[in-house]
Image 1 (cartoon, helix red, strand yellow):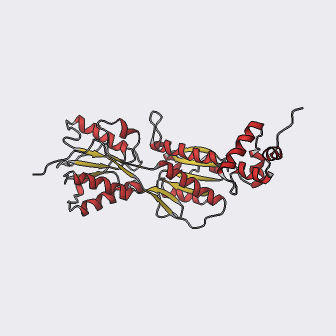
Image 2 (cartoon, rainbow, N blue to C red; image 1 turned 60 degrees about the horizontal axis):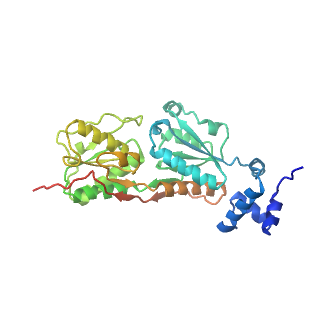
Image 3 (cartoon, rainbow, N blue to C red; image 1 turned 90 degrees about the vertical axis):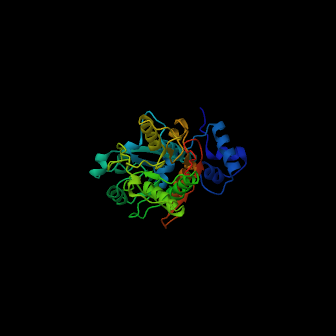
Length: 338
């Protein structure tokens, strides 16, 4: 009969205590990373299989974390920004022996306040909400008392931990760069009533105009999406700007393509910048100047914050702001105002 390998067997093999083996395999503190790696490797070589179900039952946890986001953020044919964030969350959770469950929220679910199945069926210990949802829906989720972290957005009406990129300063850097290239007629494209990040990026743009002594023109605030969050056809002002600050790279790509159909050259006639530094920034023509969001650090911070909630280590809710990096490429031209 083949003997089942136990923690005690692993401990004896390495001449350490069973408690040390348990801590290493369950992700608890008190074990160096070098020893933890050695224990995991030895366990696999000996054929030891940790009983995660027994652990979950004993501790009263599922060891599942839910990730929810609006369905319109996901496009099957594209490597989208939020899917990259989801992959980062999954990677972090896997290291901690947690499973990750993704569920998409439809507009109908939000409007009718229907909770996602992973919450209503008690499948998860906590959730990470990726991308902004309506406040009424966030309130509905908060009423469940489930441990929650917001990622890439915040809601001023909710006392919930959030992890965001520094949108204000990132857009400030972008607009400063455009101004340094001689542009005075700079527009911002984004519905500032749609998400907190779009509003914050507008505030960074607005601040830069003031600092550089440039006119703030109401017609240069151009909406890009409707109340449902979906893109709408962009309407240009009569007095065409020489540069556009877009709230994301996808919008910048769409804007550049539309400008090209109207006969404009980029950046010779009109300059365009985006925000996020993902797919569209790399394959657009010309390549897009943008701000790179630190996805790895943001996802690590979101997971770490949620795990601290699970362990009862954090009671005060806060907003964690992660800095970005200005990436200068080919979509902004220097102009002569003489």
